[in-house]
Length: 461
Image (cartoon, rainbow, N blue to C red):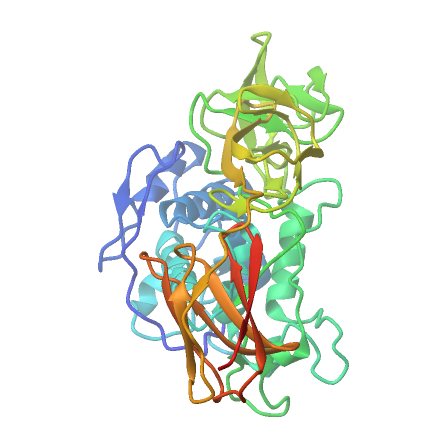
């Protein structure tokens, strides 16, 4: 790992997880007590790499302890070292002095522990990654939280360095830079933490989002710090609670009697089948490549078994067409991504049109019982005509009264010459660009929050 950014201190984070067991708070000391959760997989030995399953467990629990998607931490470790802390009986040290499984190159840590203590090496790598996520200079996805894998794209980039070599796009052609560090890490996530050619959502990058000289070693400056992604984001499969109802993603997904692909299937699920989380996940003892885990579940008909973590998901119903708390001055078409809905207590069809003036409560429920509530109003009543005080050829403002909190716009012909918002009393003062000639006709528009408009014409005296 070549971290070109100045590393900040170990961050303080509080995380709670089913698989963590209890809440933990990171302090300035390097706490690796999470590694004890993997003791059933064997004892850590000096100069000996743990088994694939043991490393999987270590990386998983270190990530959960820091509230980071384990899929991300595992892929970085694979990219950096192939999950190796040692080569032969010696610590893994790269040509650029990267040390161990996370290839830590930043100074200020205990070098001997970085070389010989795999849990310490993992923890330091996780701390560095966590510090990158906290940087305000790196972009994020609008509305996404820490558990959304795609929201770690730029933090992963910064783990290696925000240099031109890692630009998401080639500046000269605008094509995706497939050799960028973070692109390679995200491909590892797709290939080893998911199944069936899952593709993570892509950012709508433009070359104008980044300011840098391709031949320079200076850091990239990010000109767009917030992205809106239209494709479905992927939530980490590791932050569910015992007894929580989740969904199976995909058809013909097998319920296994043991945490491995080899035993006979107990049953096959169809897409969107609800199941209940039934315990802490387990590590496949037969695999040496898949980075996912097996999650114990219970079906609605009380069968118990294991499902591969990539097939487990929870997703709140997504409603489009209306926004919570907003008023509309026209008919709206309401859609949702899945489930069933009621509108003011009555069944409502996906894609239905709401066109009557009223206040509405829409409740959408998915197959797992998760609900999303949106409250909105349809307001079809135009605001009352404004009261406008006299405007003379010497006036540089238009004053009067209109519906409170409405928008007032003053036009001369088709030209907007001033705008303002009314106060709680309804009064307004619109500064116009300049005094108007005598007999000029001005139009004063009042627009309420729902978008309804009323208009009054006045003559300059």
